[in-house]
Amino acid sequence: MSATAEEAWSPPHHHSGLRWRLSTWWVILRTALEERLVYRGDFALGTLMRFLPIITQVFLWYAVFESISPNKSGEEVTIGKFGFREIIAYYLLTMIARAFSSMPNLASGIAQQIREGEIKRYLVQPIDLIGFLLLTRIAHKLTYYIVAAAPFALVFFLCRGYFVDGWPPLPIIAAFVTSLIMGFLIGFFMEAAIGMIGFWFLEVSSLLFVFMLFSFFLSGHMFPLTLLPDSIEPFVQFLPFKYLAYFPAAIFLGKVDADELPMEMGIQFAWLIFFIVVCRFAYSRGMKRYSGYGG
Image (tube, rainbow, N blue to C red):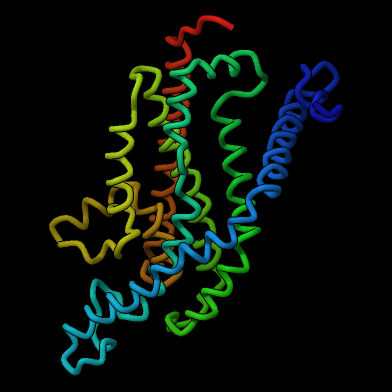
C-alpha cells in the first residue's frame, strides 16, 4: 500500500475526524476509479451494443401507432400522453436513467460476503461496508459515463429527430440531472437493503429475482407508466420504482407539470431518506447478530 493510502487508513492521531474520514473516502474512490479505467474500456462497445434494441423498438412502436392512427401516419395520435417520436425519445432517456440506477450484483454480493464470512473485515477497518460499496459504485458509474460518453452522444445525435421539442429549459435539465442522481442513490440503498437480508437468511437469490422482476416492469423501463390501466397506474405511481427510470425521462420530455415537479422531487427525496434509514438499520441490526469464526 502506498504511503498516501497508509496515512489515510491509519488512525486519526494528527487530523480531525472529518478530515481523516474525507481522506479515507478519497483514497478509496481514487483507487476504484483507477482500477476501472484500466480494464473497463469495453464500456464504449458495450454501450453501443445496448442501444441496438432501439431499432426493434422503433419498428415495434411505429406498428403500434400505425395500427391505431386513423390516417395511418403513426404520428397523429398519442398513447398515454406520448406520441410516436416522444415514446422513442422516452425509451432512449430511460436507458440513461437505468444506467444510473441499476446495481448489478450489489445485493447478491453483500449476501455472499455475509455468508462466506468476508464481512468480518469491516469490523476492524475504519470504514463500514455501506460506505465502501457506495464509493466503489460511484467510481463505477463515473468510469462508465466517462468512457461511454461518446457512444451516448453518437446515438442521441442520430436519434435527434425523435426529440420533437429539442432541449428543455435549464431548470428542467437541472431537475432531470438531480433526479438521475437521486435515482442512483435510491437504487443503491434499495438493493443494499435487500442484500442485508443475508444476515437473517443464507440465500436471497429468489427474493432478489422477484425484486428485479418488479423493478424492471414498474420502473417504466419497458414502457411509460401512463400506459397502464387507470385502476393500476395511481398505485404504481406511488411506488419508488418509477424514480429509477420513468420519472427522469418524464421530466426531460415535459410530462411532469411544473406545478407538480417540486412535490414529485420531494417525494423522490423522501424515498431516498427512507431507504437510507432502512439500509442503515438493517446493517446495524445484522452486525449485532452476526457471528464470525476462524481467520
